[in-house]
Length: 295
Image (cartoon, rainbow, N blue to C red; front, side):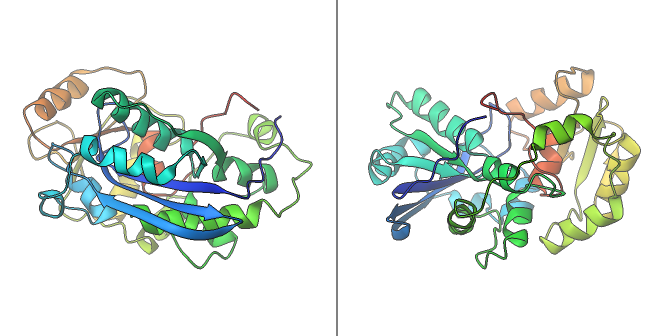
């Protein structure tokens, strides 16, 4: 298990995206420059993703097609963003995702990505508080009594991540191991009512949205997921059509529904595609589950 990195100078980064797959794109990018533990400058920019924004994503972020119509492309914004970040180590929550999106965008644009990983707030929280029920950014900030609460907007979430990081680096590391506790725990049984209440408190509203679920997932059965979506105002359909808002699928599972949704996306229909894990993570009712290699 690696040591916790306690940085004095760093840059906090965050992105909002059209989804969580490798084919999705950045909608908003933000950063805060920290010197001697204090914010000295910030950067934020809406991005035109060059594709329709799924209504599911708009419901989470509030970012609409109209808002980004005149915004620059990520290729145009990246040089300014990277210049702002300089060569400072990057801090974020589940930072591997944000760095991955930025690095793919740099590769596509033919730009060298100069960002390096500094520390992950989600990893720190697991080291310090392995017994917590969740490790989403909203849960971490709520548990740490962070005043800058995350709202799925890049700069707001940067402020929240910065505040959480500064608290966590001054917190003793627990003698317990989060991943050992997970491996020894019984199967997770979701409390759908509690999840729905938490999502509603975060402003999640699926009214007018149609979801399709395909495959299976150990985190949540199809019946449980349907119950959660319905409690948040959405409906679950059996077939993928142009009116479908989001397809939730089993990771590594391909069906006629996933193929049809992918085909519709290629034709410009803004259907969000994500695994059950990604869906639950996006609405902040569970944290990212990937076990980092360094542990």
